[in-house]
Length: 340
Ligand code: PEP
Ligand code: MN
Image (cartoon, rainbow, N blue to C red; front, side, top):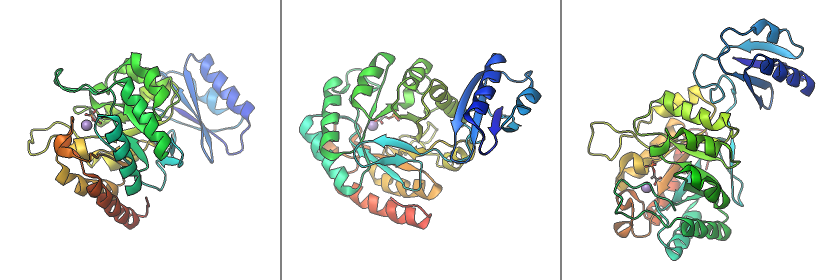
């Protein structure tokens, strides 16, 4: 359940509600909204005394939350969450502006990364992506530059002012990656790694959580809930395609998840049409479609020489194609009442 406080309630009244929840052996999570403060009650509250909470001073009403995810649900937080990404240009995701995240699949070397970072910035990107630790299906393929890659990403941030989004693959990497990155990416293969979710939940960096390729919407939002209830409210959801029988694409990109997430949750949703299709020629169209469907952002892979990329070249846009895509996305954004 959530306890909705009255407008203008005092901090002491909120504190009394928190104390009452703790006295019931339940956990509390206070969410201060622009108009209302709500206190989410976490744990099995089925047999607890709702009347006792409802009669406390400053309480407006008690709303049961039926979804298994509580703090990620829109009932607990009716306004959309706007998450600041860091960097020098005040990039955010979740507000009226569409956020464009672009960069290579992997950081390959310093000069190529710095060059592509500058190119995506000039084309209109708001954040730079690039993997330093790569989850590879084949153990003999390029695994990423590790900490060296993180250093290069940090240098690119210094030069461009763009916040850096990069993957953290294991719990022992969390502090290291958080030292360099602005946004911690949890890859599709790790969406069910609950210890890792708790690990990034203890940091103060926003988390870009990719949907597992066989995860349901429910499992996706419960993974987000792990991160939030561990203490980190800044979770950005990312749809990157799911496995189906279809084989003309690398993954099937289910854009219907965008309105579904908007209905179920206050968290922003970003779409990744690069992994979601596997083919560069499909990426611009799916970027436009994602924004038309209501996505808050786009994440794409950009490489100056896709044919020679060490990872995911087939789905990488050239900087020129990315620049055109940004213009097309801007036109769609305007058509649906948003902007870049
Ligand atoms: C990536 O972003 O390069 C990546 C490995 O993504 P995913 O986890 O969605 O496969
Ligand atoms: Mn990739």
